Image (tube, rainbow, N blue to C red; front, side, top):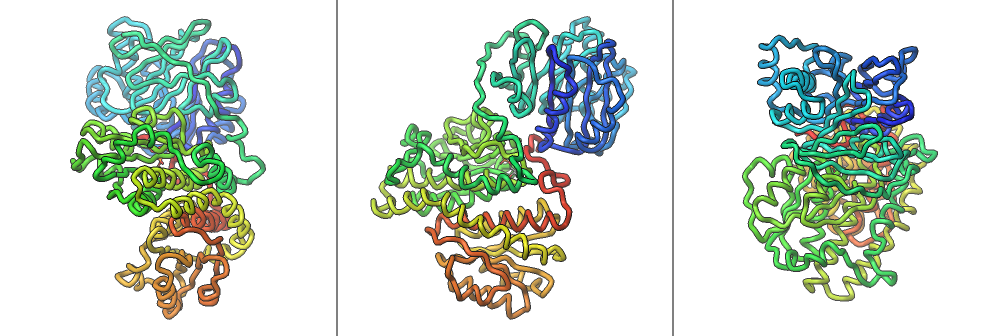
Length: 614
Ligand code: G6P
């Protein structure tokens, strides 16, 4: 949801900023822009609708010199994605330029006030209002840029990560954050800024994660200094990044999404490393063990999340209720935060988020905390906002996920939820020892079974071509596989723009069956566990109406194999772990259909990976 980058040092800023924008493009790609203080001491802004490659094209033969600059890739909130609304935005006198990720909620009031004072506006953005306000404060209070930013922000309601440069001040960048992420990279005589660490890791592994309401002054040749809005200096911890550059590259795959699908056996191994013992007889999730009493005494657990993470949460509900016998409710974070939910002191609220930055999930966690619940985070991005504000949590260790459609983060979330369910079950004694050990051993075998599952990729590539004509898809599953049906449908919608609906298989007869004909394919997740016979009946009902069926079946199942138009075999596993295997062919199907349709799978239209606005 908008990516921001900044550089000040001895090197040429432009190539560093462009590279940084490319790494952050997953956060938005409606428009891109850069502001530089050139070697001629000019503050130039180049920006255009489209992607970072369009910006590079646009800037060819322009003066891109200079060792200080800021850059932005946008996911539009206020104002349509066009050249004028693209960031950076100038102030009235064009002596200040600013980039922004977030939303200024009271922009209309501020804008009206500035207009009454003679300010004019070129764009429809809330960002231009803030940069004009900074200029106004700077002029009327006769303060320097840093203090002008501080003072202006005291008038702002909303969320922001901003970076600001000033024409006659080529040795300084001022940046600030509230509810939108911002990372400062510390190199040798140079500083970097990024919405996350990905634009920084190539140059330095030393970073500071800014906290809410902090403003940082990055000055050539000086230490970074951080203050709050009341000008009280804040201490800061320099963190060493664990990420490696190769994790941010495509590694020979045509798209990040395909690379990430194929990474899953390894990400799940990483996710389980140190959590399952070597002889596969026990599980230890430290976040749960350290807070054992909270989980053992919890009368219920609430899981809150958005998008794919919410689907993982639904699987978590089935796992925790079955293994640990604690009632679980799963909520969309966006609904939970606004409906005055009943949360008791003893409740445990688990929030799940790949990015750790989703605005609604963050707000749900804050609400739960304020009501006295114990809040546990399951996140992928280390050091992001959610893990820093929750009481405890577990990382998924899936590594950076760049493709906008979530794949490896989903299976890693389900793995963490499985480990959590098993850990609580062990502590509570809700599972006989031999059953527990059978499950642990089975979970440990999932990465190998994923490798086996992924071998169907060439077959899926071939038959997926047939379905590019489809305008609608139905995905059906029961029990643990109902959320998998939802996730399969979401993947297809996100990247191929084909309408798809996920349904509990038994609900088909209450509506969707009316849609079934030769034109609408149905994907049925039908492993030999759970309600096998009932799903077989559903397939017969679809076939009787001339519907075409793609079935995900357990290896060796000849019954459904003979009924379905296409079938994909997955290895046998425990019912609760089927989602970890069944999700893979659905991801591949969505990928290959989107490819044949010529869609941009890594950057689907209108979507962004990290949704830091409501
Ligand atoms: C966006 C992404 C989805 C993701 C959702 C929640 O919509 O495109 O892939 O599932 O946000 O994100 P989170 O980072 O909180 O898991």
